[in-house]
Length: 314
Length: 276
Image (cartoon, rainbow over all chains, first blue to last red; front, top):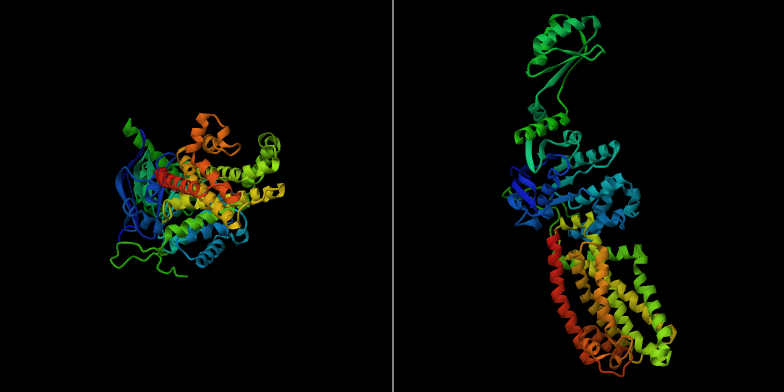
């Protein structure tokens, strides 16, 4: 099989609002698809359709070979969902929450307890296992939430903005947990507003805005679409700055910018620019202590993509 | 652990195989698991039980000591008359909060998770109703216990009393589904509660709970005669105190209860499905 899940032409309307206007999303088994977009772009709607919580008005979605509309029970059995809002029961303890899910997934009581203990350990919650979830911190709640979506060892996991509202350290924790799941072969769909998060976790990214996918590709490809890579050079001897500036100008055809700390940078559009710069610096006998090629941040990618859209629309 | 088949594709290579296979009788098991969840939650917040502990005691004291002398002349006689019927009322009152709590519940993320699990759509609702039946038990125990302290005495056998308790619990179980439906279609928990009272007051006070039917004005007598709750109260008196026919009111109560269950349970499940 080629895709762990595949949605084609999803359309969903809520009254007069069109939440999805023909969305295609797909991921190969064992990969992470990042769905990136601002609030209200349609990310959650797409996730809810794939998780069988909503029926699409048009289009089709297949998860693990099962159609979400015609075989929802089969889809539910092989997928796990962590919603945007904490989907744990506040009154129940960590253990009770996970055992409950285990039993609803047809594990026997004993198996459900074993699985719960295992996940609590994995998610660093063993000490809090017997406390009601309402006493948990935000980060612990998210971890429990994630654990809950993994009780049935799902082949496909949907994480709807799993780190929204977490501080950077806690975010890193969640990322590591996602990575370890992927290593075990799980396919993950992750929605996020954080471009950094998609860059850190996703094999492929679909950028979505106003219910449409406006770009799709690997993080590197997306960065490339926007172009505008930047070469930065810091010569070992600041006296060489002028020569370096000449070289950079000759290679890129652009005027280099000085950042005042002995570093010069210049935007380039040609893929071979970097090697050309290296060669010429070598020929001129200039040693450098810093030489780098920056891709634009995903923020810039997103900004460029949405602006292009708006211009097209206007 | 039996979960070893994770993430393997099936033989034809087109479909994932679930790590945990389905077991039979899912709806029953899942409903019981959900009932247990509801029980745990009730135990953690026992103040939810005030309406089946403090409220019936207040009602008994209020009616027996404030009105009993005037209505019946003897407090003891009035207690014998009042208690079996008041128990019906309190247990039915106790069936309404299920709708309120489900209304609150389905808005939380937890219900999203339940909906994403391979369980019957009705399991969370059935579980909620079953779990809340503990409230009926508490109400019955409190009322018989407190009544006994005040001098209430059973005029029949314990067997009949148990039959009566089961009958009333079954009736309340069936009535719960009206409130589950309300909980599914009304937006705010407060509104569910308000509507619950609007429905429950004519049903439970529009009976001979406080005074014999023949003291009521004609139009009210007409209502009491068709009101199923009045039948249940009649049955309760017959089974606890004696001196009155039992068979017909019991049958009527059962018939009404089943009818209400058959109408409202499917409607409630359908309404829940629509919310998903």
